[in-house]
Image 1 (cartoon, rainbow, N blue to C red):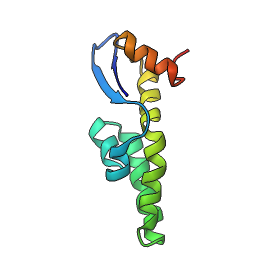
Image 2: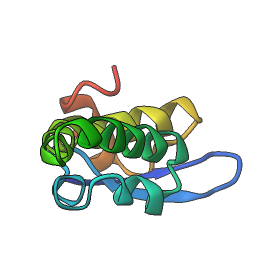
Image 3: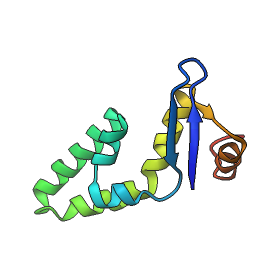
Image 4: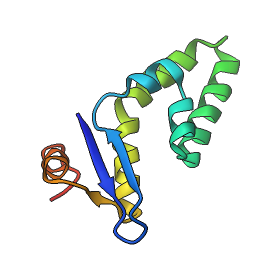
Length: 102
């Protein structure tokens, strides 16, 4: 499900998906990089490089699978921590249903 979040001060709008990240599964750290989420892009890339070196690249797929399940949630939590709030009621309801908001 897609949600929309707005920052109250800057009025910046971020649209993202909650749930499984197919883009992270297929493209590794690039979705985080394109979203401007530099910290997680670097962490994912370093994990893939560090573990892939010792496993002839097999662990790159494993890291991608793990982060495909958790990355969108981490990104949404990061947006909430930066002050972003749901832009509409449907987004607020989806975030409540997934446990991001109380």
